[in-house]
Amino acid sequence: MIEMAVSHLAIDERTRTPVVLLKEKDGTRMLPIWIGPSEASSIAIELTGRKFQRPLTHDLLKTVIDGLNATVPKIAITELREKTYYAKVFLERNNEVLTIDARPSDCIALALRTRSPIFVKEELLREEDGVDEHSDRSMEELQRQLEDMDPDEFGKLWSGGS
Image (cartoon, rainbow, N blue to C red; front, top):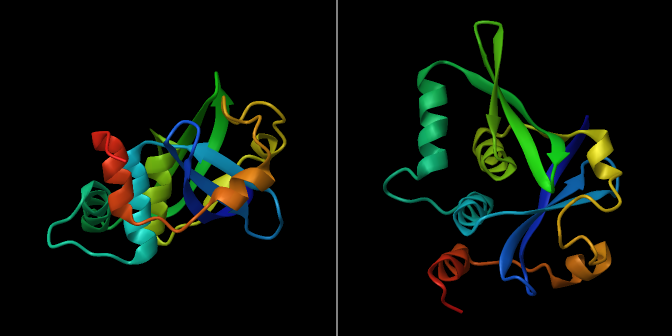
């Protein structure tokens, strides 16, 4: 497993779909993951440090985990099947570890809130053609289009605004 960090959030201009870009912590490899607007908004909110009066879904999940006296020692993006990534949240409590299947975007949003490391299976970083149906775009082109997004922009995409 390779440790990664959230590098950027962006909008794929062709599909108007949010993309989270993970970068290898001690290297240069990148992994783009196309995600939904609400998950992108949740990630952007945490990256920008914005807080709301009432907890959002990922904040609530963190509160529940804390209330159970559990920790999230890591999250892991573990496989790619039919152009869909699969991930797991690892919960630890009283030296017992539980793994929970989850979408990568939810795992990333939770990892940011719990300050947990994000891991990706090595084979996923070597996939030539499997990251997504948009993988024909070069990584350099995607990186050039990455920009700091206001979380409200993701909401506009969700509602069909521009």
